[in-house]
Image 1 (cartoon, rainbow, N blue to C red):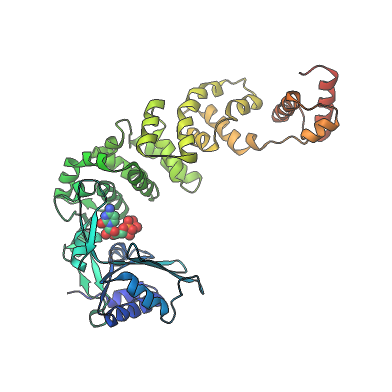
Image 2 (spheres, protein in one colour):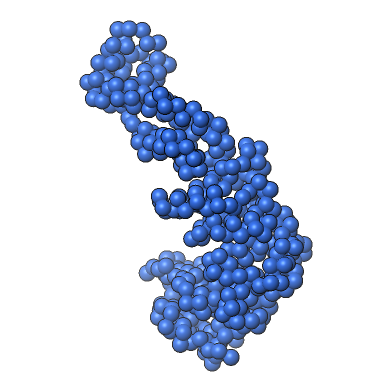
Amino acid sequence: MENLASKMRERLPAELIAFLRIAGEGAEAQGQRLYLVGGAVRDLLLERPNLDFDLVVEGDAPRLARQLAKGEGIGGENEKGGERVTVHRQFGTAKFRRGNLSIDLVTARSETYAKPGALPTVQPGTIRDDLLRRDFSINAIAIDLSPASFGQLVDPHGGRSDLEQGLIRILHERSFIDDATRILRALRYEQRLGFKLEQNTERLLREHKSMLDTISGDRIRHELELILKEDCPEQILERAQILGVLQQLHPSLRGNGWLAERFREARQKATPDPALYLLLLVYPLSEEEIEHLIARLKIVGELERNMRQVPRLKGDLTALADPTLLPSGVYRLLKHYPPGTIAACALACDSPIIRSRLERYLNDLRYVKTSLDGEDLKRLGVGLGPRLGKMLEALREAKLDGRVSTKEEEEALVHQWLGGNLK
Ligand code: CTP
């Protein structure tokens, strides 16, 4: 069996190795066995950086965590010297934080699924049970941290070989039925790592894609967010379209070339933002289709408002193409729309004039402020009431259109209005 102790020394921070050794010895002293599992092992073998470490103990994780928290160099239950440990007795888990390292400790468990899409029923188990409940062979590899076998690979499902061949492989035929979020996870890993779905895995994924309907909106949304946080989410969405997975979330969603171009452009302009990507994804949809998706994915808050405004703003865009439109007209059209929606429409629309007006509003017009405020207007003799608000708005429009630029010019305009009859 392969031993990874020297690779661990090469690739992982020394203080982490020291911690893993102490933790492995601590577990042994309690008659338990400790393992490093999941993504950290996969990425160690692939020589990719990963600072999220999952530890699995055959026995009782909180018991080991409390023991380690007392030991030298590990913070207590509260923050201390940048280290922190939190124990959740109820869930049998503990978390250590050290700078940007995050270490989760859980009890090894076996899982059974009462029905598709439900969260699993869990019982304490062995490391092999714990690996068997996992999604793909490349995530079902462990490294033994026991003192006598420190660094030994535990690889019951051929994960090492799949890493070498670049394959995403499920562990058993019912995997996607038990947990259909794995359908989305499979596509995410495939693109991130430049891997391929193993043949039988792809067949079962296609066959069982309708099981996505058994997954709650919150869980689907979480997976979609993870996809949109990847470096090139458009590739995952394209693959999801080819396999019919995207259409399973909503029949009108498309991961096509149009979308890919928009995503790339969004990345060139600024740091990628999953919310902006999602607004671009729903841009081609109708109001009704967007409502359906908001309900299905349980989208709330600012993103819900921004999504809902997309079809409305789309309907208003043609008015922005009028060449005679002044900046104040652009402002009036856009002032009630959220900036997130406007940013998405600016990327999505094809007309250069509309796009440049949306951008001008976002970068400039929406920040234009008059020199005079309400108090100044009162001082100049404008009484309280709707007229004051109207006058402030008219002043802002005058400033937007360049009819006034200094405070004195604004005051002169107000005097002119007071002499006339702007109601
Ligand atoms: N896991 C699983 N099935 C899921 C979610 C997670 O089997 N639906 C397992 C996998 O073994 C995975 C581990 O739990 O490796 C941790 O999950 P997560 O943190 O989501 O994945 P990582 O492998 O750490 O990958 P990432 O780099 O995307 O964080």
